[in-house]
Length: 383
Image (tube, rainbow, N blue to C red; front, side, top):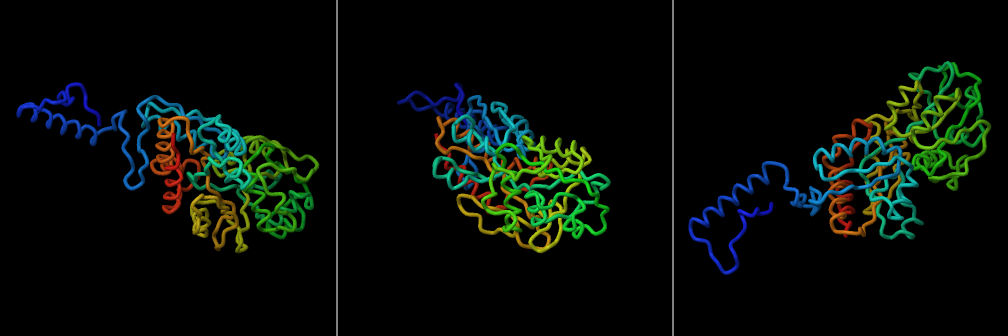
């Protein structure tokens, strides 16, 4: 709360009389009521109880820029208008690209927030010591397909071992015995498999390759885990840019199989594509639902302070095996105190009030313990 001209204290050296003092006290009480019962004053910078983080942005107009993960893009598309509706002086400039672009843009200082499905690699941490990866939400990765004669409602069963042999070229047709054994009731055709993968630097690729390696390191080695990959060459394979590109490519190619984030589930359904029930570490086949994602999250109880952790192939009967934190990649050394405050305010809002938008993109909120870790990371941002 700030004092207006009519509420200004008396000049130095002068003491107000009784009537003046009463007027000042009344003005202060009315002003305090206005600050606590309505929207915060544009110049106010209240902080969250116990965290020291601002709950409102600075008073000056600001545009925060974001680019990166196309998996996270649908969420930022909801967050931008929601945050602006609450704080009209702040706009979010959003650009869907890839996790790799988000990380490189944040490191180069060309964006304020880099969105990434993948945490910073050890090489990135060494090269860019001012960058932090801050979880904002929990997501999942789907495997999708377009198989002639197979209804999307079938939810074909596949696991990491079979997928590793598919994407390494050892399984080339949908009626291969390995696929048939997992799907005894499905009339699988002899259609050739068309492999669809990301052609750009993608956190989705990192998640998918991590899953195959976790379940079958023999057929998918750790050297084939990454955001960018030299994919084994296969006849007819398709490299697509962005999550939307994956959905479009799978829809256009009979016999195709690909991977995309759960935030694109509605697009997958609209395109008439099938969603795989993935094999988990217990040998069960599950879809990415609220309960299976939460079960997967519950199997990881020791997120480190820097929040760099793989949530792949968790243990438990109903665990969905490809889940991840969705990260904001941010430089803790900002160019001004105002920009630093605005970033802290927005990121703190995202993991608190911003959870209201998660259901629309099939994401899950962070556990309370991870919220506290993210708040500690956000507090490092200074200007």
